[in-house]
Each structure stands twice: as C-alpha cells, then as structure tokens.
Length: 110
Image 1 (cartoon, rainbow, N blue to C red):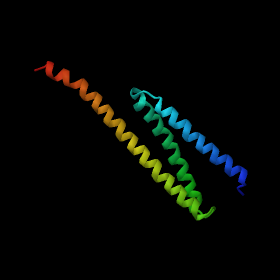
Image 2: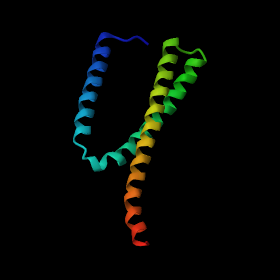
Image 3: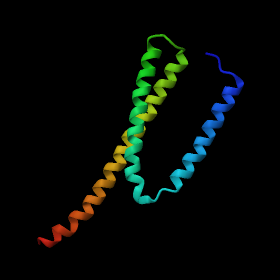
C-alpha cells in the first residue's frame, strides 16, 4: 500500500481536527461527569488493547514491517497504562464518595 501526499495531508488534517474537537469537548464537561466518562474511556482503551494485540500478532508472524511491531507494542503499553490509571482514579473517587457516606452513620451509633 502506498501513501500519497494527498492521503497524508488528509490524515494529518483529520488528526489535528480530532485534537481540537477532543479538547473542546473535554473542557465543556462539568466535573461531576468526569468519573462516568472515564469509565467509558476505559472501555474504549480496552478496545484499543485488543486491536494492539491483534496488530502485534500480525507483526510477530512476519507479515509486516518491524516498525509496525514496535508501534503495536507502544500502542499496547500506552492503552494499558490508560486503562489501569483510569480504573485507579475511578476506584479512588468511589472510595472518597463511600467514605463521606460512612462517616455520618458511624457517629450516629456512638
């Protein structure tokens, strides 16, 4: 597959537009919705992990260039970091909310 100049320019333009759109969407989200949206982002990163595993399998079997194997490995590592970090933050937020709910009930019993 050859990459033409017009296809490269179109891909870069789409990437830059996605960056601006993502930034605008994230800045408009109220803080109370960040935790539910992070759970959705974790699901999307989970799909990215599956895709990276498939790509690394293709690269491992020698059907593509070595660069694609390294890119698949980098995608796998970054998506895994994103999923683990997202679940850690979500768990911490849920513990903070649960801690607030438990404190008044423990003082009432004493």
